[in-house]
Length: 411
Image 1 (cartoon, rainbow, N blue to C red):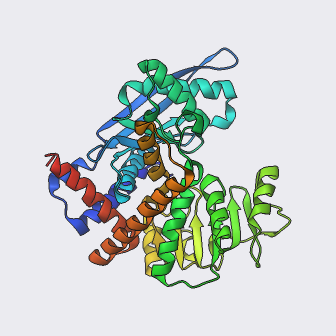
Image 2 (tube, rainbow, N blue to C red):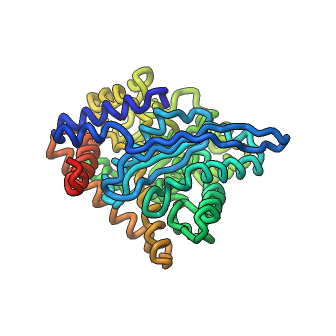
């Protein structure tokens, strides 16, 4: 993400405000997080030396419920990015109508350079540094880039040691054995699929649809598998090392086995390595599941798909977004498309609070209901304001947050 992601997020807020006209003092409050923490995390490395890591937690807005958002471990983490992501989380929770606010955390680290022991000590150190500022009714972290259920388990344990009692609802995305929810592992992709299915109907795309997928991590690989199982033809898939394609469609099960063995999609026997950019594929649907700012002014004209769905956060730069709209390409924005993850995180909290756990079928039924309803509400806003789907989603989300602020007397 660019060094000034938050400036971009503020521009989006300014744009939506021109549509919905918030009163000045609500708008002003939405321009900055309620609280921004910066912490130093001393970690004893395997060689006996102490290394200090910098960590952050941004608590953006809790008008609709406790702050909610992931913790990423990445060398590119910076204050602006964490602020921007916490703002987007506020909109994401609001757009799918769940009673949570927005937050985000991060630590500047390349976790691939740490041993398992160092990673655990860093995870526990981060939790020790922030535990007084989080809680099941205050701020609820989750996994994000380069963090996973195992890391959430360590953090939960550290939190419970610090407060002296069980509190499974303080963190979501946990292992099932300690209060995690079924379907959480693939919920982002599954939610995206429910939204995409509705979008395909609205846009009027017909049968035998072709797809290209940029990014083959958790969300991208799961989305590819779900699409393939539902009759979509996957023409091309890329990861950080390269891209594989097949004019007759890729065999996704074999491709996943190949990735597992070799660590990438290149040199897959069931396809050929692509020389061209994945964005240039002449397909019906393009799934963006890689990193922020994957589509910029430099490459936006390459996009040939009719429908683009953002499974990653912020994969299309704002100015490139306008070009796609001018080219009549429909974009399903991240705050709606990838909200399946936070929706199931919310279900996880509900299950933790009840101390009663749902079947996978029940989780998926609830997820489908939320995603289909949210898509249709976003589409209505898009029509109401005669705008694109992204601004329809923003209008719905920001209006909901603004209303909660008014009803609490924050205006």
